[in-house]
Amino acid sequence: MIIVPLQAVPAQTVSILLNKQNCQLNVYKKFYELTMDVLVNGELIIGGVACWNLNRIVRSKYLGFVGDFAFFDTQGEDDPDWPGLGTQFLLMYFAPDEVDNLVEAAHEAALES
Image 1 (tube, rainbow, N blue to C red):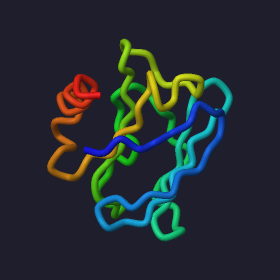
Image 2: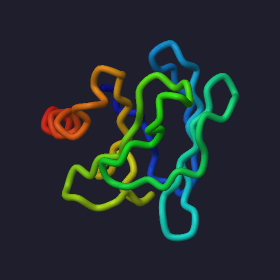
Image 3: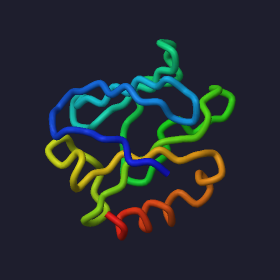
């Protein structure tokens, strides 16, 4: 599991190499919730996904993305919002063998940080 570095701003793009995938992550506030796009090598894998606490972002293997993402509230069970990104709300990448135990892995990572 990898914590993706985010800043506490309402819209941002992060480029990061994850499991040999050149990823571009767009995280932005849309209406009342935080939303995320995932691109690999410039191609959209999934877009406009509502970000909720401990809810997988990609969800479906047929999309071809290796692994998955989820936000984790380190202080409770709130859905993420931009003022707490990178501190209260962590974006975590989970390798394929970690996805099934996402909740447990997120709690362990929070204890370590």
